[in-house]
Amino acid sequence: MQSELDAYLEHLRSERQLSAHSLAGYRRDLDKLLALLREAGLQRWEQLDGRGLRRLLASLHRQGLAPSSLARFLSAVRGLYRYLIREGHCRHDPSAGLRPPKGEQRLPKLLDTDRAQQLLEGATTDDFLACRDQAMLELFYSSGLRLSELTGLDLPQLDLAAGLVRVLGKGSKVRELPVGRKAREALQSWLPRRQGVAVDQALFIGQRGQRLSPRAVQLRVRQAGVRELGQHLHPHMLRHSFASHMLESSQDLRAVQELLGHADIGTTQIYTHLDFQHLARIYDQAHPRAHRRPADAPAADAADDDPAVE
Image (cartoon, rainbow, N blue to C red; front, side):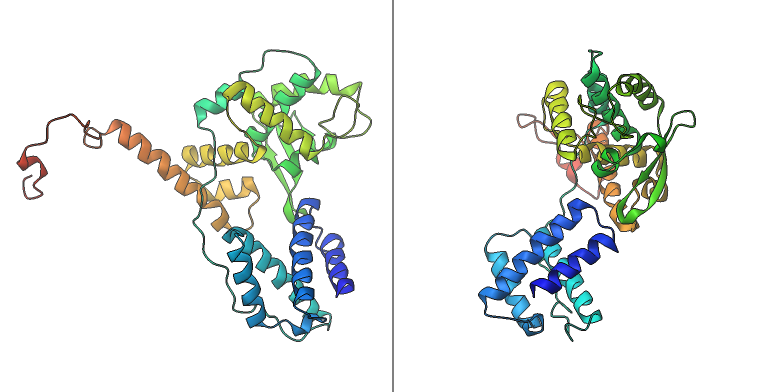
């Protein structure tokens, strides 16, 4: 069983070209599946049926695994069995017809436009790290990049004269994105400082000249959030903020989908909920009939509450 699993993970790496982050997630889930099957005394993938997989999912749910994690686990199992069937190692898919328990859809956290401006205008120093971090923050917010897309950038992918950056997204799909004026200015300040230190073509490097790791970028973004905003901040929050602010201004869901590199517009539609929440807050603040009555205010006249009175 281990050999078939290893072959599938290699297939994901070499043929599907999954990112290291995605591949690590598949490995964790499928290693867990293999361990559970061995605990149950199963020695072949073929021996797991739908009822057995349903019991495994129920057990993981009882152990506190979140619905989103169960959905990811089931997706990994489904992908593995499709591969096993295609390669002749199994004749059935135990995940067929199974669905994970539904969980509450949580909207992504983001910065409003004022907080985003406060973050990006907060830097005051002009040294190597400050210039680099400012360029990273501006580019995240300007172009809606994923963390892996930013850390994977090389110099030839950036065209400041044209105001474009070419990124390699999920599924090895390339897309060209606009780079805003403030981001171009920050990058123009960063590039001369990078030049004398870099050891390769990486756009964002550390003080020793090597490409920044995703973990290092996460740390610097978190530090900027604490320093400038007094709150937790992560790179994807800047991507969410970019998407929500773009949709709020343009009302063009398809355009935002293209900018984010979403294969399915359903993924992008979550930002319509965020946009509605913003409109609802504005309504509550501005509409005279939406204001909540203070607790010590006198009750309204009966006629005010009578739907028949217009």
